[in-house]
Length: 305
Image 1 (tube, helix red, strand yellow):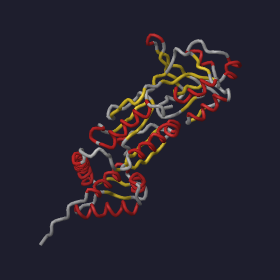
Image 2 (cartoon, helix red, strand yellow):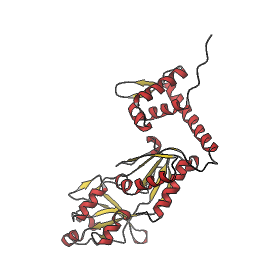
Image 3 (tube, helix red, strand yellow):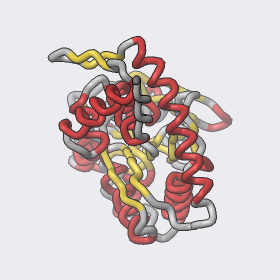
């Protein structure tokens, strides 16, 4: 007599979808916060429950079998339905629970987002947060993040963006640099200045796109002897009088007030709002919805930079 196969566990399906997406047991383990041995065990149990191999393993890569591709599609549907069920069952409970995976850029993440998340967990003890700061643009849908808090208005159409705060980037330089090099009079003059070029997430490297009076725009190719992938490094160089920097207003406000930096071409700025970017609408997840609302209030309140 053939005994019926056991139904696959939801946790095993969740682990499998992460392995399939990351094409790596170790990367999946890191994302899930578990050991590679645990991931291997859950995949083995899932394959036993379904009676078919789902993954092909080599020394360098994990690939999904044809049967695995079908299971992956169905697993996503099952997990989405389960998440909706949990949210619906707990809709009367105001306190969000569970792990929230958040990422942001290096400088903004450290100085602004990290303290906001600390306050979020203090206010909602049922939440736990895993926070990563990255120097590259992130696709939260592909990389397993619930929320990407980013600066910049270029957002892929498959993602859902929620404006948290208006923001713009300013052209700044130290008085010592301006005494040596003079003031630029037009955006095109920036091409003749030492500019501190940043490769940071959404920045196009070496090209500054600005908006000016009456909706005018300018795109300037800038160069200089110093460049970096870290905005805080570029800001420190600017304070040392090494050149012109394009930084968000939250980042340079104190230095401008203290006179350590001066605004250049004040009529020309680069719009770069603060966004909460999610792979799905927050209404489908109480923890994401609460986090977005909290971050919006935090940035608008007295604790904001």
